[in-house]
Image (cartoon, rainbow, N blue to C red; front, top):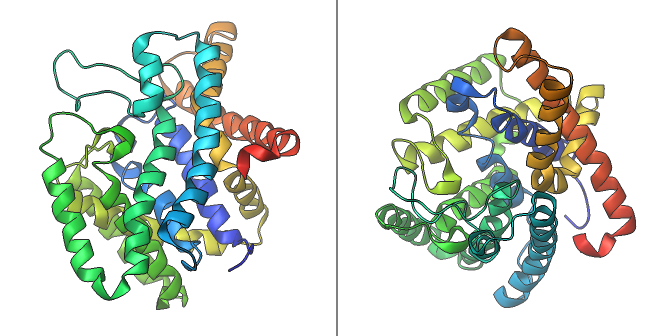
Length: 326
């Protein structure tokens, strides 16, 4: 693949980051059941989809991946601590532990480790830890079936752990399977056009899977009713959005989404802080309501504003701080 960029994959990431921002906008409500099953998996699937052949050792590949992910993770962790002025032991520990909280949701006296605007940063360390089992799937392809069974068993056992493991180690194998799905999608026959009726049928299947699985939050190891349903939901939703992305390729909307997608890393990291500023402006300064139809309309405007502001911040950083992204 070299340095080739696939515009429709960037469009997919653009759609994904808008869904991520929406999930934190305060207007997500019941819609989370139907968007929560896809917006994180699609990033892992996109990572596998665009992955290069493993032409070097596992350690060399992991070293490159570590530098590319931990430099922005460390930078934005420190910046957000300063912006929110959160210097407690728990907040500083959260940088190293990289989980929103120590115990699963519902546990009494839970410890919040990533407060302020830093909770989304868990994604970067999760992507790093998932890369290890994904590299194994690439390297030992003749044992793929056995490795996937082992990863599923590991995921099942980790559900019963009393704490959330650092760096999303308890979800790493499941996320690696999503990455491997991306690799299979890139090499499979799905790229051939299929009739609109097939797409509508796939959408119905996705809605049914979301309804069956219920609400989830993989950042705190909540997969809904079943992590197997979560796998199916994430794959189905991503295939649908990939087809939408290919359809939008070459259009004005597609160009905008692709641009957002190319800067999704920075937007992902600073979205919470930008949402907070937008919320203060619209509701504290302009006195827009915090409920009702107008609130939901304003929330959509906030989502777009965060994406666009984050885009220009990302462009500025890439111009003056290119070392952060290499």
